Length: 299
Image (cartoon, rainbow, N blue to C red; front, side):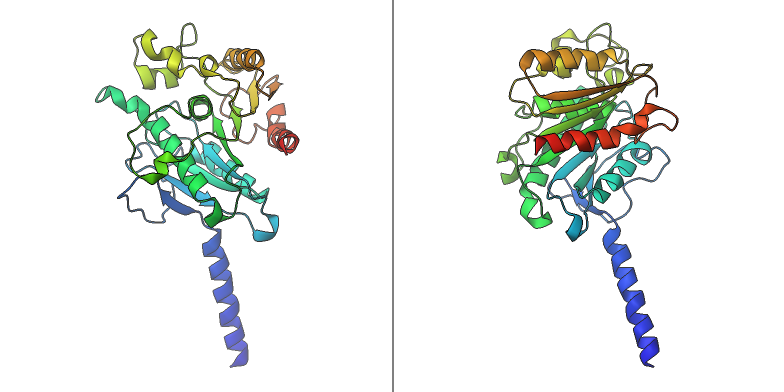
């Protein structure tokens, strides 16, 4: 009898630990009711996020760095490569002691509504404000909140890091009085520039269509929005990237230098595009630990 009771308690504890290890879904906007299902249901990630949300990954108490990171997958603003980029990175960062929020943001559909191009940026701003407001609840420093993005998610992270006080959406509640400025930024093979000759990316076409839109292209070119008081930047790109050529990051590097913004730029000889935590057989596998080394210099 005692043995059976002991086995029951052990099973209950293991179940509890398993449940607690699952990410917690957090709604971004008022009146959104979410279940705690997985963020994604396909091999590449959600195709259309009607209800944008964050998945929260919490470190163990003994490993907690008390630092939060918002992770943004790429996908050309046409889909979100959660399984390939955001989710593996979120799990890895959690193991390193970070509190991680993986964002599922809305995707623009400019054929139906040109204003929908602002939706990803509205979701990103709102996410940072919620993260900052939740610091005490989830156990991290409200002034140590970073953003990390891949490809188009890197573009989103770059705009959030340069235009944090832009009004991408009308105020909803008291949370919108909170600063949306990240404290540090990591950009992996990012889309940066939206003007010719680099206006050929899928991200560009998703935001602007197939016609040039010079009146707002500069507003969404990260390098043209760099300012001296933006957060420090970790930048990584492969020289053989054919999807978002390394010139994107080179232009950003020049802008950061000119504005005297602290940054670290790692150029890899090969690896192509979309390598997530790193493409085996290339130097891109080094970026996670290079990121940790860089992050230590900020402390």
